[in-house]
Amino acid sequence: MKDVLLKRIEDRKATVAIIGLGYVGLPLAVEFAKGGFKVIGYDVSERVCRSLMEGRSHIQDVSSADIAKFVKQGLFEATTDESRLKEADAVSIAVPTPLVKTRDPDMSYVIAAADAVCRTAHKGLLVVLESTTYPGTTREVLLPALSKLGLTVGEDVFLAFSPERVDPGNPKYHTKNTPKVVGGITPACTELATALYAAVIDTVVPVTTTEAAELVKLLENTFRSVNIGLVNEMAIVCDKLGVDVWEVIDAAATKPFGFMKFTPGPGIGGHCIPLDPHYLAWKMRTLNYKTRFIDLASEINSQMPAYVVAKVAQALNEERKPVNGSRVLVVGVAYKPDIDDIRESPALDVMRLLEADGAEVVFHDPFIASYRDDGHARSGVELTAAELERADAVVIVTNHRAIDYQMLMDHASLIVDSRNAMARTIKTRARVVSLAKTSQQSTWIENR
Ligand code: SAJ
Image (cartoon, rainbow, N blue to C red):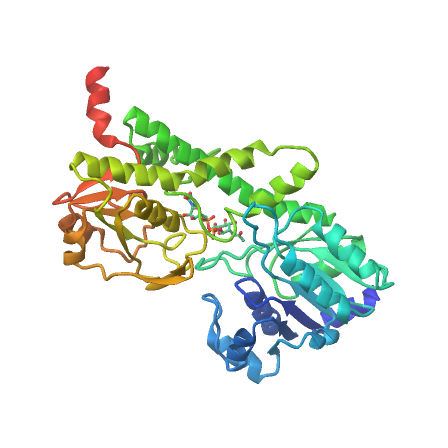
């Protein structure tokens, strides 16, 4: 079986199925089509499949021109018909793995995809799970499901895990030039998964087990969460010492080895960093081990929105204004600069907390004109001089490059800057309050 599939991959005769046509699955589907493979994209969304078949991409990093070309050439087909998976020689599962309210894993999408694979599996099939998940998922969920069909994994069918490393909006790294880690249940599984991805991705990094591959991704993103938590705590430390945290970080970043720059902010958002580490924390709890770094980083990062709101309240108080009844303009609500994604954005928490204190909150984001919050649509405002002059406080939450920060300086009266976005503006009208109370710096020096 292994050699037959290896040959089909080598000759580009293998049909590749991708389950889940989102920000991971669709770029992967396009890479396989570019490599000359016939690709069947399976998604439960009728709307997604229809727009793809009409040649339109719904993913920022995938061009509609590519979709239209491969649909026309018959190399890519999007379908909601699960039975089409029967045609696949290899299937990659790239479905969401969110958390439920109690921050426990929601495996429902992975289980639904695994069930679809089992209903259409056949001898000679390679299955690769890409969704970020707790270590053990591939062996504990997918392996038994396939074995129940009477198929021996490693001989009749092959099973591996390969973490997705898609960084939406990254101008330099995309699916083809980002090294791909793969780990199989058996060496034959690893060999086949390596051959499949090596056909379209520049660098493939095999590891010995599916657990190792699952942990690689969790280490990558826990590393970020912990280091972001560290610099957020450093911001609080600098605030109490009256030191400019940005100056300290920029100077530390001059160290050419042994340091990696992270920057403080209003908290962490997105579909990876706030969620992935909790998959590991959950698994370790089932083994009676408390992953203290993950929990501490999460505790610090998740209290940053409240920290920013406390800064706003303090700054308004210095103007003898209560938060209650003040008009606050939040600038930048996407979860990170220069993208249009608001998922888990700390800006949502900042706005909710301000409104809970009675503030009248409006927002501006050049990438997000409106979004749905608790079921109702919220629209942003244009960034005008009038809007800035009307605000009792302007809060910079996400520092998009497209925003004119000098305009904020010239027209706002009070700015709370959670990203050091005002650093390069010329001081004119606004009073700027940073995450760390640099205004105390003189007191610190006087008292020494
Ligand atoms: N953040 C900070 N300070 C930092 C870095 C990030 O406050 O120094 C915040 C961001 O504003 C954002 C959140 O953390 O709200 C997450 O930012 P991120 O840069 O980690 O961006 P993501 O969530 O898009 O992470 C993805 C991840 N990619 C995958 O999971 C495949 C991550 O592993 C990448 O390293 C990251 O992109 C990247 O490098 O941009």
